[in-house]
Length: 96
Image 1 (cartoon, rainbow, N blue to C red):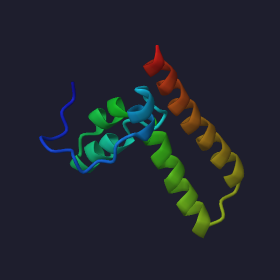
Image 2: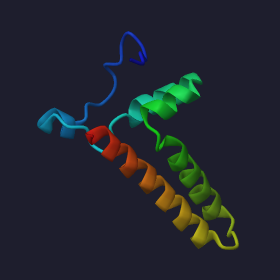
Image 3: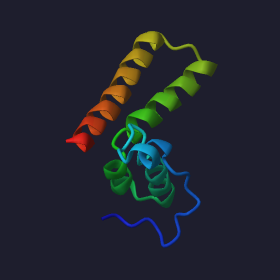
């Protein structure tokens, strides 16, 4: 198992997992961000595969806010579908 640190008590608990015992579609994103901040990119992906499409989407949305991009709406749609597809696929795999 991937070990982040000796003390990860600062992370918020997943209320869905706490109440039902099952992972939610967002389970793992906090640890994934912590791995990214430490520079452990492959561990971040394995912890939460949707982290990279989500980052690309957020960066593009921020960039598009300031600069209007030709075909920006199509790009946003593709990135959103890719992000959602990755998160849902990962969630289904966790359930199996």
